[in-house]
Image (cartoon, rainbow over all chains, first blue to last red; front, side, top):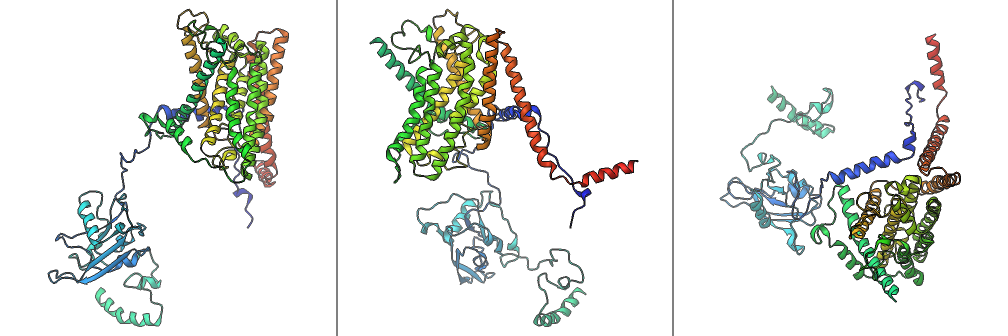
Length: 233
Length: 398
């Protein structure tokens, strides 16, 4: 489609003047900048390791397993973090919870996280429904062998004990409120994330994300639709 | 015999001073470039990093000396030696202090110039300095590396092109002083006082000399041949350890030499009003004069470093265009102006005005050339619709 001539804006280069063509004003201006930096000296260098960097609160370092107020590990071995992990570095061995923990069904007997395979993406922390696994601000933990950098449950609980009062590791999610490790049992209904036209089939669902498209889904929908209608009414 | 001992002592003093200065100049350059870039620079080795050059020297000596497989061994080993040798040889005729006011006690043992009374002083410096291009050419050729070869070809083209304005800018000075002897040129300036500095009568020659000298030593903004962003290392890619250090040494010695030459030829040598006058009668006058000269040289070196870290580098065609289209015509015009002034007996300070006029003419020519280039390209792109719309506007106005 040809563009109308009146819609075109012509931009001219600014004309170079006499002094600018000699390039001396540019050189003088450049020298003023650099000499200004020398005389008004404000280095931005951090003298590591004497000055450690200021890390933001959402920094993703090595992992820890949180304890609850009774000192038990919060993790219920639901395997969500191991499933979410893109690097497949988490191995959990679940075990039936001891009888003196009535509110727990399972707990992790072994929780092995290979910190060398980990890519520190934080997906495990986002997936955990119990606020159990978190990434701390520790970036400089080293080991002298590969086995040493495969953290087990005791090591990660030890990191929790060392960092729980550091002030740099706030709880970043509140999903612990969803799991069996907390008291809240019901969540407010979530609406769709974007504004949806009323005729759109996604606007007619009770839960966001379930789109009825197949015959099986149609039947299932009819089975629950009146229940939901009754509840709304 | 006494002369021989004095020469040997002077050579050792100068060489020791220059080599020590070179290593500490590298440190100063790193610090100044760091300050300009809001960093700190070397500060771990010794207090504020003062032992860094010693650590660097030790590294260069102890590093493994790699000689690649298919190089031409003789030329490969000769190239850095040539580069360092020629630049140091040029210092033989450069006075580094007040030559005529040596105190009696030091006179048998030390002179302020290695070879005094050389009447072809400047010519010797340029002749020997021109041999430095052999180091670059041999370095690139002997490396058995296509890209080093291309880098060294570009480097040699650059160096050879800039030797012409370098020499021609000094012809004016030589005509005004009537001699090529560096000691006599300095003496004429120091006798003339502050207004006798050659920079007042030859400012354009000073600018041309400084620019051409920067290009000769492959310093930014002319360092296309050895920059890291374009070529890996240019002609010194294949060199490691001590050979690389010799190339570096040659480059910094060249910087020191051209700073000395700039101060001696244009800025009055050791003269400075009220501090170091030729009529001074203090017993330590020679020390003051030495101090003034070395301070001026240091300031020029600092300026060269500032320029390096301020200005972006020239493209190769811009570089050659600058030499052949700008500096050589200006240098020629400067020589012609000096010849006019000397022939017709005008006051020498007219040369200041003439130099400014030449500079303005060059600027005007460059502006009109750039303007012509811009509008010539634009005329073909602009459509005729613009005239139609302006025609409609005129019709409506009527």
